[in-house]
Length: 95
Image (cartoon, rainbow, N blue to C red):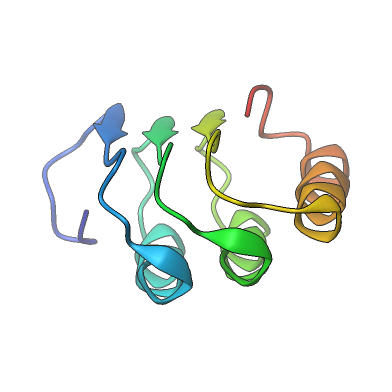
């Protein structure tokens, strides 16, 4: 997923073990992407640090509606942060 990609409504990047460093790269791409509405990151071992960097992008990206994050080793802190971000910006409706 790069800013110059053709318009996409959904991307499935599940079970790629991207970790928090991959989440950082995705976060940067999400800040400039204006077409993606569904992102599946299930099973990528993102953890709390990855959840934190992704949440920063959600303040900028207003098109993402559904985010799949199951099986990512996100603990209570990361979950709470994502919940707060989704409530604050009202763009994520499912995760």
